[in-house]
Length: 351
Image (cartoon, rainbow, N blue to C red; front, side, top):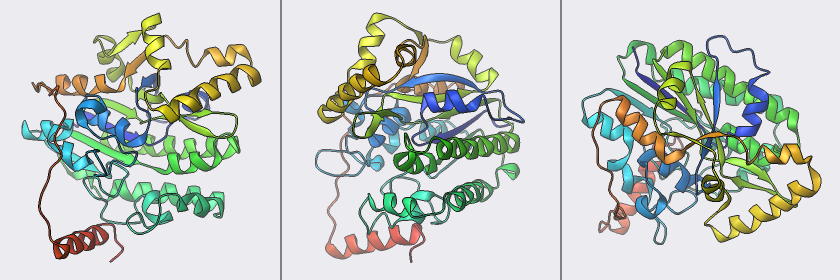
């Protein structure tokens, strides 16, 4: 029996999940939602914090896409510190695929039809924002149908039912891509998108039948006057057994003024600016009771805490580093660089 199943949904917003999960007829799962908090809500730093259990000042992934750019580490630089590799070294059998969403990540998605990131644009050739135009021009029903079928294909390719696995960790990106385009514009489209995600997690839960089950994300969405931005709040969905385990540990904390100040502080200057614009927008345009739910949900789990809880569940001792993880440097020729790009394109299915 699989001990732990983790499904990652990029851009799964806590409040949207809270609203839609009660409307979906789950067959095999009674989800328990908790608010997941990250100090750095940008995709790259946020996922890296979940993977390693440390902040970006230690894991060093500060680029939004987790690329080896400037002073930022890439996801490859931190792979010795991620929880699934630590668990694997302890002798457990794992299956990890499609993590993270960026093309410079690991492991690679071998088939471009598996994930929306790969079939709406060429991530290693085209700019990162072209997918917005592609999604806007697609028929929404066809878009959701393909997101569903490709996600199921990603799962089926793993042949999970025939493998004796201890940890399964899969990630999906369609909620984030659709959310960037339709959040706060077409609520019905977002509801349908979340239903696709719930259908998928219900199917995977039935297939794997895990002892513990976690659905996690990197960020939510927060509305501002002119646009929506990343928010600190993502969703953490647990089954009953996982919830009991979390509740009996220090991962889930109770609300306090200290915690509130921690949530309200965004370290990135641009995000901080839009955050407070968002706060003003909420104060002026939404009912006060609705606004308070952004701050007064009494239980939450910090993104970095999940790392320790997972390792304890596998009885794996590990001392996290408190020093910045160094970038991996190597001397490469132009020919080596061209070959590396070619290999990446092959892995993504473009060659």
